[in-house]
Length: 248
Image 1 (cartoon, rainbow, N blue to C red):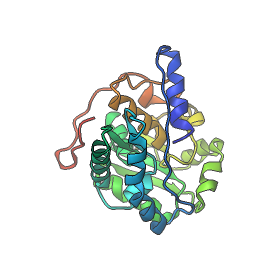
Image 2 (spheres, helix red, strand yellow):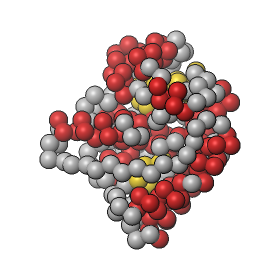
Image 3 (cartoon, rainbow, N blue to C red):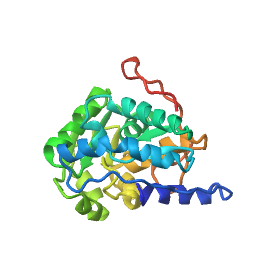
């Protein structure tokens, strides 16, 4: 969140040179990616929302995808609504985007119903991500769990390895590939390389989060170098009635 999302926003200078962004962060503590630490982390999100709304920000992004997904199907809607309410109570109302909800929204935006994905999590947590997306009507044809338990090691993972790892997936029938189902695992610099290699649209949790935040700001969701989703104006695709998104 603190590296790739600002990088995407900075890249907009090529298409919108008059725009200026400031980036503010508040941290929920987590060192090992376990269900227990993820639950404790999510419980701290209300504090972060209040702290960030002190700065009267225009949009909030909740960066931990698996913390949301591990709380149960559809939880991104609950979290986004609750954290928005905290900003309202603090006198600094702002829309809230979760990376979990943003990934779902981004995949729907490009019309992806079948995907393959890479995740840094231990296999049970990666399976949680697969089940969450399945509940949202997105079929995961294949996935690989890299099984990296330490959060700092996730951030240190070499993104240059990701296109090759993605190529080993069964992706031929997929509509898109998720190169990193985790905002913490870097992938931005190889998104377009992976698209060329795989011949498919490629997204990441960070790219989808930036896309959703730009839309929440009322700005064109376009940024160079971030792959198909941010390559140009995308249509608003209908959302299945069983899994309606809050409008942003």
